[in-house]
Length: 326
Image (cartoon, rainbow, N blue to C red):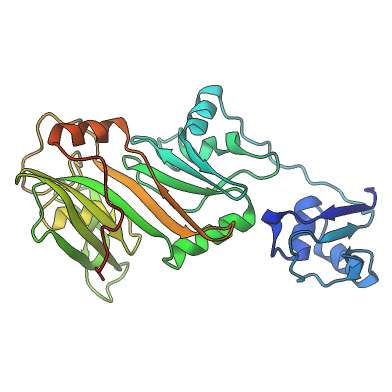
């Protein structure tokens, strides 16, 4: 049996349904008991009766009466070893009460799968505030480095996920490619689907409109700097989020990303560069769950810096790369 509680609604809980807010605090309390207590007026918001779908605002006070609740046995929170805990904490380049931004290294998977026991998702309990474990709202390929954002609470996670789904998230990637694309600016678009590549392994291939599983894809690109005709630093803005979209698009126009052994073109590899995928999620701008706009640039990882130095590319990149492009 619990006791009467008067709890203030936190900023990160703003605009949460009353019944969902209660269930987070009292696991095991059924909807029927909540509805009955609301009808009787035992649950009140700022001293007034409320309905289950009432949306709470920051600073409101909720009165919860004593409840006889059988608390279900919750799964044990996964433990994160000291090495992985230190690693994920070292990736943090921004945080506020609603979100984290990480600088993901190349070679580390974002989520697990067959043969992938070590991944960022499994490390996220190390960033917990004691109540919520941060959640992923988008993905990066294992070998892509750069900016990865997380929601710190359910409302923030939903807000960030909505921004990505509604294409309000403006993403810019940088890639070092084989050759120097012509024209220097352009749009790569078409329908993509999973298929079989030249080496009889599954990868993305072109599809047709109306074809089963084919999805429309569109990428803006612009050359930032060139190293003669052998290589270029290219900025990419994906306007859709298909699997391997940037890697596939660049290979299909004849300028594969250096270090990509899956999506290749007929150009020779760049000698002397690190044998790693040269694709970096460089910047992101989107509506912030805390209000206003979140904008962040992500520092280059060591292998990308080394390649830029070897090719003579400046590391100071203008931010208005796609101004005027549609």
